[in-house]
Amino acid sequence: MTNSVLIDRLGNWNPQLLRELRGRLKPHTVIATVSFSIVCQIILLVIASPNSRLFSDGWLDLWQIITWMLPYVTFTLGSYSIVNDIGQEQKRGTLNFIRLSPCPAWQILLGKMLGVPVLLYIFLGLMVPLHCLAGLQAGVSLPLIASVYLMLAPGCAICYSLMMLCGLASETEKRAHPPQATAFGVGAIACCAISPFYMGWNTAITWRPLLANSEIFGDPHSVVSWFLIPINNIGLVSHAFSLAVLGATAFLLWQILLRTFNKPRSTAIGKRQSYAILAGIEVLALGFFLPTSVVDEQNATLAAISMYVLTVMLLLVLMVAICPQRQALLEWVRYDSPGWQSLIWSDRSPLLVAVIIHLIVVSALLVPWLFGIGIGTKKLVETGLIVLCTTNTILMYATFVQQVCATKIRNPIGWAICGLGIWSFIAPLMLRFWKLIPDRNPATAALWTLFGYGFWQFDKPTTIPFVGLGILAQWVFLAFLLWRFQKTMQKLKAGT
Image (tube, rainbow, N blue to C red; front, side, top):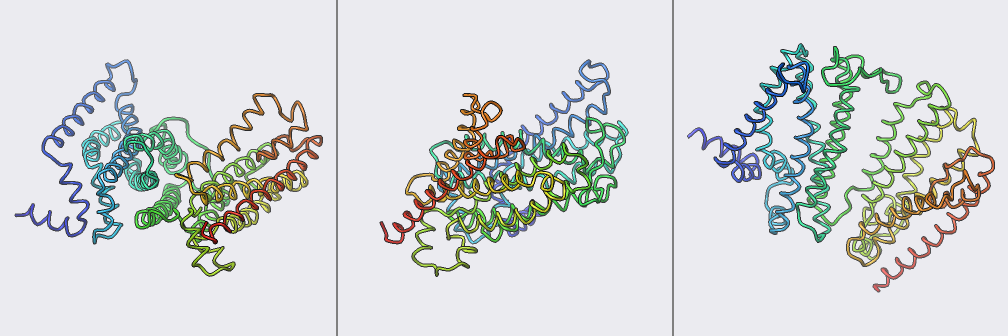
């Protein structure tokens, strides 16, 4: 009777979660999961025992192994199972049926996140007592043990939301590959990118005040300041900062995920969101690179390169995320009222005006910062050329991506990404292979600038004129791309 009441309450709260649990919590699967978890714990106890030659300090080694296993196993296998489940739903044709159900999108997505990896949760949950026992026996502080599990929850929310977003976007494109291929790809990303970043961030910032020795691995990290405030000296401050960043990221990804699930044919994010995302990430990054923390020219150059790479990559991601497809452009050009407000705010309007606003936001933040760390004052002309080259490059990329997405082809985003890869990576690699580099021939700086690498040897006076020539070539190519896109929009308006 009690079980029936609990099942009814769970079904009323989240029918999708109940559906996932019923499909996975079969007696044989639960017994297999429990058995496998017990066997793994026995193996860990054996290899971490004092008689084993693999490890020297038994309890501490066991604590470290399970601590590092938690994010890697949870993120990797959880992402794989969730994305594979979405792919199977799409393949069977039940995903659209779920969309049409009266349940709100948040219930469906939350049910997927909590229900699909439920066997993984059972497997890891059974390891919690051993993990806590090993930590206490090794002298690990109780706050550090609690913090490991506290930070794992928002980490899972971010990882699963991001990977589910990739799965929905991939299935929306209807690519000709099995769901397992997409699931394997996102699992690899979770294992090779998200998990190391998660552990690196927490070890350097969140857990540093709680580390007496090397309970996680590695030497103690130095003090990190954000807008001159030390954020990894006091446990309360480090956790508050990390939870604020993780919470804001999880909330943003959740909103994007809800939008993608409810409107699978719309852009991943709206233009309003993209402006806020760009400003927020840039401010967050600049907080670590204030002029007072950049003490010499070498550090200033490294900080400038780091911000350059981060900004360009962020702009490219946002560009793809807000780029409308051909059908959206067709609806905009025929039904939306023309004007600057529509170009700035409408999700169906062309990409170019929004990208210009993104560049204005970036310039308003980065240019004063470049002068603050000394790069702008010591190398005024060179800094101006780099800013101009970067602006031209982003505008060329944006025009090219929008032109491809306005063309009547299958999977335009994929073609656009391939085109950008050839232009920004393959072509420069060929120049490098042929030894056409400014070190040997300053005139080749024009070609590197055309491909978006105006910062190459920008501090040498012999290359500056050729960088200027490359910027002129960028303007010519940008004018050609704009002319082609204008012709495409005229055809859309005419219905041809």
